[in-house]
Length: 595
Image 1 (cartoon, rainbow, N blue to C red):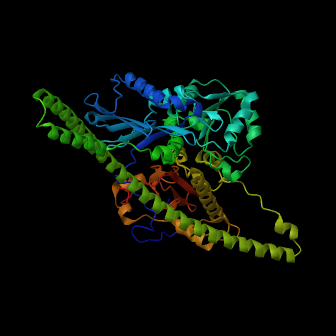
Image 2 (cartoon, helix red, strand yellow):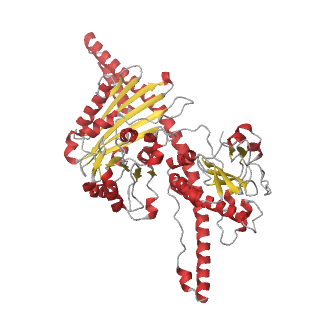
Image 3 (cartoon, rainbow, N blue to C red):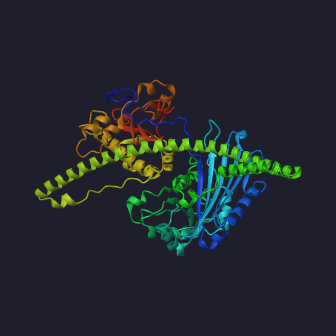
């Protein structure tokens, strides 16, 4: 049954809020591990790094040629070895780079680079491993498993993050060692994420397999702790209800944890046991590793690694010029055999220079692809930054106005002799920290909504760093829709649309910023069969026998980025259900700007 509310028209295209999902250059850096080497192991660091790299090459069935220069190991594999020394002859840096061309499989190019550097004055030393993927034209990047090379390095060196050793296996925490976990969690020197897996109440082989995959995907970029089931309640008592974990849950704690802080608790992503057990929640191990991977590739390298100086092609050309000059000078007073020897040497130098030039050209091409990807990321980040500033300014302005209004109302209550009422805070439930939590609470709280949206699609938003902010905004929007539904159902029912309701802001009723509410789509979306089909969303059969209606009314949760979540709803307050139907919560649906 159609709504009794009038449907206002807006100009085609709406008010911004479109996302772009056009082909874009992706940052080729898909994995980065930075391993700090303790002082007592620095003397053998370069030898140890070479040994680990050799073992890794052998595991691939490749020849272990680690002398300086460019080595064509096979048609697909190219190895470049570069050493750097100070004026006293001490080695200061080492770079080992293996490039694999897999264009024949339309997988593109993979490049793994080990860089090791030491500064003897402060006693700092690092081994870093970067993995880059340059996909074939028209293909998307692949999320890789960390290179086995990193496992070799972690087994060889003693690498710590704060008080925790980075290892290839999870740290087991029993009831008597919860203190060690809490110390690691709150350690101010911890720089990497800490992933906590709380054992389920009962044995669960699927959960065990998931944990194995999580550990494999987090090697070198996070520490993993396994909380035994009898230790779960002990940890919950220690951590408090903002940072705790229940049986079967997996939680990712970013650095700088502040226990007891509700605001800080929202930063640390939590996946419920129900969500992890959902058959629709696929590739959970990869999705759990997404936060640590993003943290790793966006955190700047230590200057010692980033600025390590290596001889470039200029050194090779210098050797080539010297060989040519020496050969020319010897033409008049050397024997034929001597000249032949020198000529052979010069040819070898030329061959080496040509090989180096060819490799430099390949490296330049890949570097240019990286530069384009970083430019794209910079544009997106700047765009989002400007939007976030504007959004923050609007929120701050609204907050200041509300604080002033509260102060005026409190003063009036005091003057009326109701001081206790003036300063007794109203009971207000906290906003959910995730969409998984929102889905669990929404049915009990929202009495004037019919919820037909795909919960899995909504919970996929939890993969994003902004998920807690989005979940809070969606919660506020649903409260406003529920308030509208209640007002429409009353004897003096509100007679306008939800947007009218938000503009009127009836006393005591929850509303949502009117600029984020759109009651119609653009003509280009309405008239496009594919776009329209995406917005044919589920309703109860008493609303439409086909169980679907075109839901163009929507709320904009975010206006920037490729995800930019939306709520699509259908106003049936004058229809069979007498409620508002929520048909979609998820990423922005396709339109003319996303194709």
